[in-house]
Amino acid sequence: MGPVGLKPAPVHAPRRLATTNDVVKLQRLMTHVLVRPLTAKSGMQTTWTDGRPMADVVGEFIKPNDRLTAFERLQLYNRMYWFRIIDAFYDDNPGLRALLGDKKFLKLCETYLAKYPSRSFTLRDLSSRLAAFIAEAPELTAPRTALALDVARFEWAQTLAFDGGSRPRVEAAEIARTRPTKLRLALQPYLTLLALNHPVDDYVLAVKHREALRDAASNTSETATRRARLKRITAPPRGRTYLAAHRLDNQLYYKRLGRPAFLILSALQEGRPLAAAVAAAGKRVRPEQVRAWFAHWMELGWFCRP
Image 1 (cartoon, helix red, strand yellow):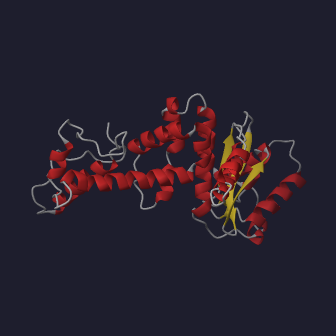
Image 2 (tube, helix red, strand yellow):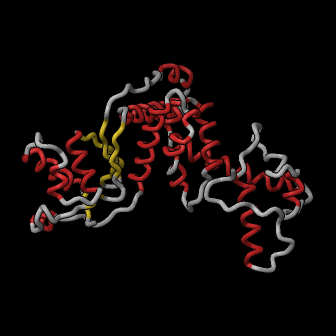
Image 3 (cartoon, one colour):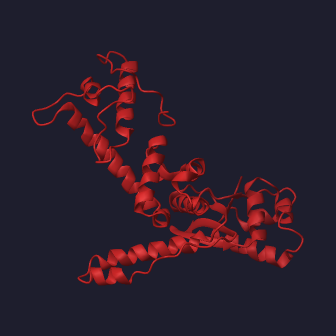
């Protein structure tokens, strides 16, 4: 099975580019070559998907020059593509890398990106399907699949919070003049609500803090000594955790939520009227608690029009 979302590659490159369709076929073939995983030695694979020598396939649409063969020329781009997206994947998922270790993390990265290659103009979207992929292929993260899934979801939520879209805030006056049984509030697009089985927020923060210390140590003459002092971060135990990943004043934040508050926000996100959303929190929640929560959420700018 080829990469998800890409149409199958043509068997051969067009003999000449006479039509738009010829150009599309050439682009599709080139894309399939570039996103094909590298070998264990970080080179381009020597055979094509149908068993033909890769040199023959490449020779149909790339010319050699006085220094490099057609295969060697295209290999440069194949390697550049993979090195760049792997680098971006590492940057976006430091907690998952720390959890799995370098070897296992790289295997997950290569397998995921081979199935779900980048389809966006921005590398920001690279990990958008990672949590779903971990659930599809749990053997790649076993025996820590449940924790890996939580970490992946949290780190993707951070990515969305960092540069996700925003909409004009709903003002308090607008809320005050609408009946609670009719009022519907949406949450900002950059805000993600997470119901997790592990407190991964503290874990990922500890990982980032350790990486910052390691980077600082690498710029000193005491590199080996300081690295030796960096303590190992223990994986968090199971524990139901409710979070909101968001931003404020262009800074990334995450906020722990109690279950009742999480249920209210989730109900609003689902499009339920304000009165029904508050009722979803249960009868034990006091009106003054709800008022305090909403005052804080309004201050953070979480609400916008549906």
